Length: 234
Length: 292
Image 1 (cartoon, rainbow over the protein chains, first blue to last red):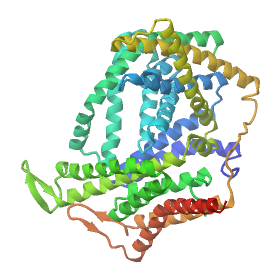
Image 2: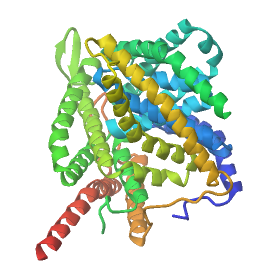
Image 3: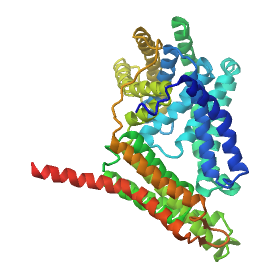
Image 4: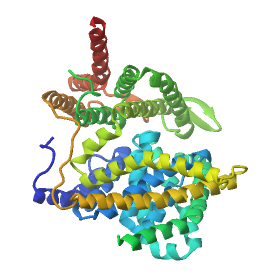
């Protein structure tokens, strides 16, 4: 498959710039004003996919050391494996907590990658579908924001718990937008409210388990990550 | 021809995505029926056991979706009856059925997708475009079974030491949290060793080559070409409005003329080919075995 690999570094770089800066506005215009008006499901899918492409292009372009790379891979594996470790207790999943901890201690980019890849990998076990890009994006963004807010989140336990509640709610809000748009072709407010109400027990469990895991794991895992960072100079 | 399972992952990925995507994004009852039938056939041929388990569930989802929409959407010109001062219309019922067909068929396509696109194939498909992300993904995928085994070992040791109590939920949660904590330390140290080992073998010093398990043969190119040709005819027909279907205010399916008929035919081939190819390969395999 050598044909599909873009050999020329210049072309690759040009594509890396062209995709985010030309394609995304073009797609938004096409769906907002052009002939694509009304295709909400298709447009939201494309926007989610392009946001993921945008991020991965930025990541691919930079040089990343082997240690940083491995740390992200290990944290991703841990957040997915956590689902199996805690499988004895139903609906308790440490993925969001692990993503937030990674983001706070390693950085926003690592947080995004850990979130997005955890969603992708856990769907290998629990089923891929058209929702995969949205799960990747929403978990990735939760990680990204946690990384950007790392200073206050590191300092205050209360803020960390609040972020856990916010993450549980935000995840449900974003995923239900997709559910409703996918089902209805447009974002019908009544249907969206119904979907949110139906998801309320799950949202509550997400929020509560996020808070519990962040409080239970936040400090010890942070210390472990910081220790590894100091010991090996990542 | 060759079944999608045996074909190069690029061809299989392209085919499944186009077959699922076209019906998913143009809301046309004929396309949706073709998509549902094609995906059900493929799943039934590929994995009869999974089909027997999954198809009733998808049918239930279809029925649920068909019934939910009329309760929320009250547009449409043909009221059937009035419920809580709100008319329940025939058009809303049709729209709900179309949505249910879309959801059932895409779930069915993705179930088959999971059957044939294993993680190694997906890594191969995305490896050329996103080498670094794919590397992370493959390392993480290798770590998961490793961590699962290590977690079991840690839990056994904790249990043997008498540190792990399971009387109530809180104790169990704390016990699992301790196991997980031990696991994290182990995994981080182990990861750093892996990274050093990678660096010692020259990671990052030059262009990375990769080992590909799959080859792109002539028949894979043929499969890609056929798939793209069929899909572009169907998409062109959909874009020209020949496959247009209005649900509100009155249900009206555009006849579409010659272009519409060609579009339907092309999509039917696209939807049914995976199942037929797989079936043909099964037959051939059985014939080969009986001669031995």
